[in-house]
Length: 128
Length: 218
Image 1: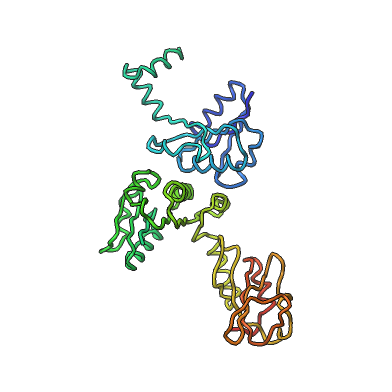
Image 2: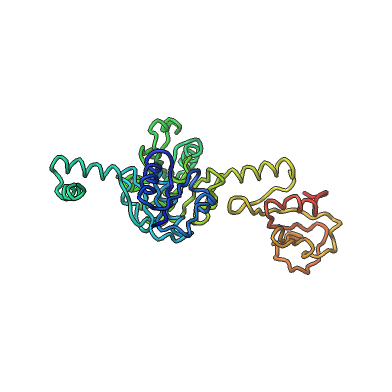
């Protein structure tokens, strides 16, 4: 079992939290202002294996990732990119270990479904 | 001076207009293209509609040659990202940001981003004007937690030592002006009527300083 903290709220973050719990992981969801110092502290960040920063603001996701990495040395931080144009910012210099870009993932899948993206087709096929 | 301003709201547009009038070269980035209307007719700088954290926008605004960047949007996250990118990726020598929500002050501090115009600064200022009108701060530091205050001492403090006015973590005497000459006093320096002292004071200790030197002063 891994300990996951999810930053976000209604919509995608909550859905991710529920799905992770269903696979047996220990999930804490943070709501409220993630830039305020006490918010993240309340979720037990020192015990977390993964922080998933999934708000709808790319700037907030960057700042929360960086502060969390600096303050709590969370081993793996995954951040959501809402605007694909911001993808280049999401790297180690902001504390981000991995990014998830729903728009880019969807584009790749759509291309795969249309037979234009063989790499993603392989992924889709292996997912069956 | 070439200045990039992020955010063309009330503060951003007023700052842009003022610096433009003073002869600085201003490029202002704003997400809402309608905000251009806030700039005065004859504004000599450039208004660039777009997202200020996008590299191509910053570069279109001349960030590579900018001497300063000021982030004044209503989003602390946007201000922090723009300020940090300017400082770390583009080595802009002077970077300032507006602190919008006091709960985010710690985030700016941890990332070493200087802030202006916080709610705390305004609150401190209003309290001073209401309660301590005569203690006019010369300068405030950080988000207004610490102030530099200058005051003539009341004559009854003549003969007392500088150290008697120092309170650890609250009040420190940092300068003494006497007969037109300024110096850094020793703790044991005796005060004379007519001395003007500079104090570094914690914002919450202004009333304590007031009680020390209140009464007759200029």
